[in-house]
Length: 139
Image (cartoon, rainbow, N blue to C red; front, side, top):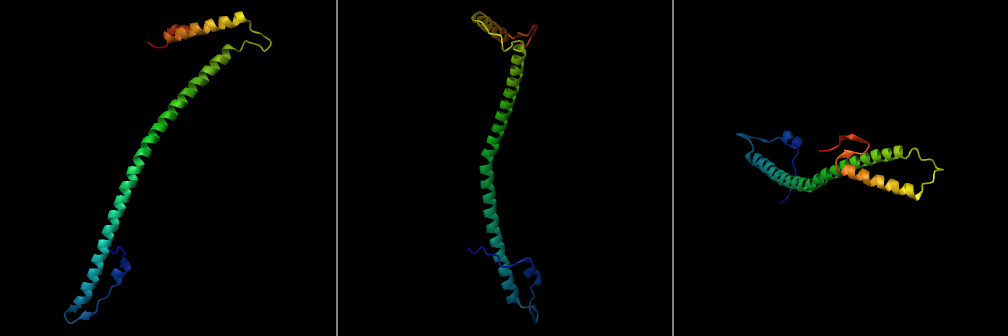
């Protein structure tokens, strides 16, 4: 099928028919209407192709939108994890603030630090904040 559109709005508006005895020449009018119908068929085919292309593009976009949502959720999770790590880092810095570069930890001190860490982990697992034993952090 020939999808070439031959008429424009201007050509349709500017079309002049030769007057006949009873009005316009019917053959000219019929030929012009045939051309308009041919163009409408071409428009219809173009519309079908465009609709199919739009549906295809929308189908290919759907998985991308889904993966975008997952990526946003992952980014939010990473942001929250980073925030918690920054808080933990600040807490450790404040706890280690009193240690001077000249202080040399002994093996006994290292054992105490390890035991304190194990006890703090236990308190955390039980729902208590080791820095404030008066309040429970989860039920």
